[in-house]
Every structure is written in structure tokens, then in C-alpha cells.
Length: 221
Image (cartoon, rainbow, N blue to C red; front, top):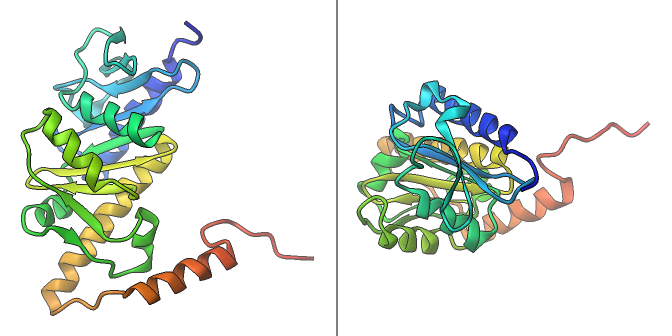
């Protein structure tokens, strides 16, 4: 077995602590996973861990079938969900939270429309996966459908899921998702929301491509 997944355990623990500090992970609610590129195994937070104090030893290593490879603690009850997203979409990391604004919306709406162009980084309209009991195959199935062509989705009366090619990107997407949901809550409290239509969204995408938006650029000399 190449590598020992030490770095992956440290990185997942650090990501869990950061998300807890940002208010997206509360107590033991939520979980984080990342594929270890050196082994192909998955580092995932263990069940029952207080995520604000997550340590490397609180992260368990499993293979893509879910069998424990390294660690003394049972992996999260949402392991099947993480593995399904990794297998279906080739994700390098997955984040599941009970972020307050996003979860509030997931208790009321079936989607979150595009109000701000930053939301396009997640793929556009944010879908809400139908409710199913946590840790069940039904929940994983619903979430996979909601994530089609998206980097994030909500889970009805439950929370959020985001993924990315790297752990840093999955965390960034989780934070952006909560920002978009907070924006929607604030805007809708003021009155009817003004959505960006398809033409406006396309214009943003074209402008972002033309300007290499989101990347640092050196000044020509």
C-alpha cells in the first residue's frame, strides 16, 4: 500500500475545524472527506467526533468500497453518501454540513434561484434533494440527482452537500453555498427577489471566460 495517508488525515481534520469555526459544522453534526491521491483511499471524519476539535486520529481511512483501512473509530454514518459522490462525479473531496441559512431554506424551498453571479460557480440554481433518513441509500440517491451538473446541493430538512476536485475547493464551495443561502434569506426578507435570467447568466459566464475571472493576473510590462 503506497503512502500512509497521514497528510490526508491532517488535511481533513483541519478542514473540519475551519468549517466549524465558520459556523457550518455544529457539534458532531456534519462530516468531511477527501481522496488521498497517494493511495486512492478516502480520509473521512469519524462518527460522533466534535468537529471543532477534530484531530488527525479522528479521521478514518477507508477504501472506495467503504472498508476501514486505517483508524480506530467508525467512519461517519454518511459514508455511503460521500463515497457515492466520489464515485459518481469523480470528486476529490466532499463536505456535508448543517449550515444554518442553507438548512433553513432546505426546510422550505425546492431550490434557490440565481440572485448573484457568484452562484454560477456552483452551477446555477441550487436544487434541494427530497428528504430521506440520514445514512440511507435513498438519501444518497436523491443527493446524487440534485448534484447533477452542480458543485453543491441542499438536502430537504437536513443540510448541505458540496464537492470539489480538491479538499480546498470543496470547502470553498461549502462556504459559498452558505453565503448564497444567506443572501437569499436577506433579500427575500426585503421583498420579492430579482433573479438573474438565463441570458444574464450566460453573459456572466462569457465575461468570466474572456477575463479569466477568479485568477490572479500579472500587469503587462
